[in-house]
Image (cartoon, rainbow, N blue to C red; front, side, top):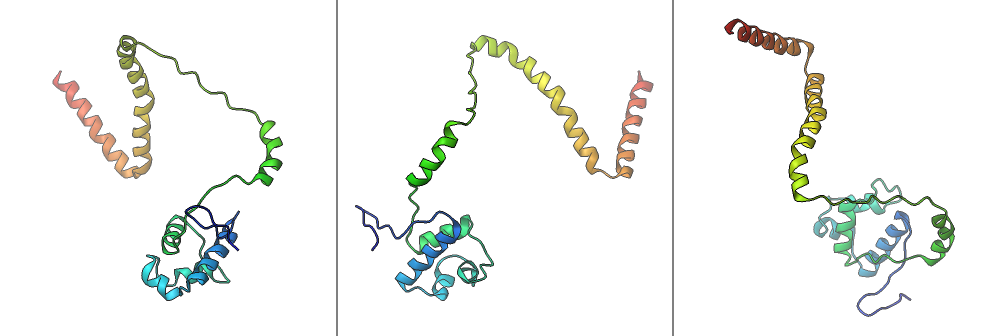
Length: 162
């Protein structure tokens, strides 16, 4: 018998997708819904439910199908701590290396205004060549040659004009 709480009824528990699919099947049977009903009302493509729930399970659960199933079956997730697994994992959690959290330094508005142009120009020196290299990698050798020839002509025309 499912446990009943204040404003919801627990129909089971699942730790993986197969167990979740079993719960979906159970709820579908409880409501007496057919695959044809799902085809018409869930927003999933025709036959998709059979591919999710069938013996072959050709399709797997994803964000779209989970949302459609939860809405169609009037279900929602309630995430709880599994105390048995927590007891097993506790020793592993305690022995782990903890991340070092960064210390955020504060700077005055004047300092930020003074150093922003310097930081941006340094950043531009690093980032600017990347765009040119990426563009060159996408161009054919013939097109790169045309662009280089045009640039050389432009440079020579400026030098001749001086």
